Image (cartoon, rainbow, N blue to C red; front, top):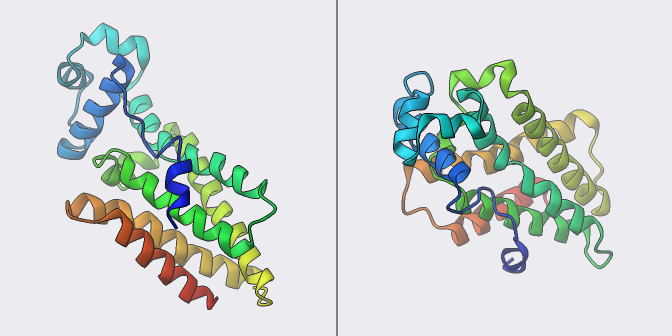
Amino acid sequence: MTGATEEQAAPRGRRSTTGRERILQAAAELFAARGFAATSTRDIAQRAGIRQPSLYAHFALKSDILCELLVETLRPPFEYAAKLRDDPELTARDRLIRFLDFDIRGLFAGRRAVAVLSVLPEVRGEEFGEAHRLRRELRELYGRLIGDVLEQAGKPAGEDSLRSITAIAFTLVEGINLRRYEDLRLDADRTVRDTTAAILRILEV
């Protein structure tokens, strides 16, 4: 389960030194520490080491910054899943295992502060529609991968059963965000191994 790490060209969260990146990193830290409402664009600009007008050159609204923080963690898994589908040598089980490895390691590679942002009350607003859409699509992608595994194992699941199993698996992975934020010593390798094993046990494959 280490091959996906080498292929992971775009982890969940990027690292660079551009002005836009400094804004995102500063905002992630401040939103997590103070909350969204209590953080101003002036605070973010000061933390990022830029002037406030420079911030507005990248983001028109404070909510745009938070939305981008959420969206950037959701984009890479879709690209990786497309690569997996194009590999005819992989079984459905192999695809799921590699996808879990990629997705979980991507969470570890991203910003720690983003871990708590998705549970902020403010994120429920319509201005975060793109993040909500991507999250729904990611969950559906998990469902397709899990459904393929069950089908190939000769245990096809009904719609309700597959929805329930997918919800459990998706919650296990998504919960790593909060665990990672709360436990600085959380190990990526062990988390990948334990989470994958738990999901495979749930699928009984």
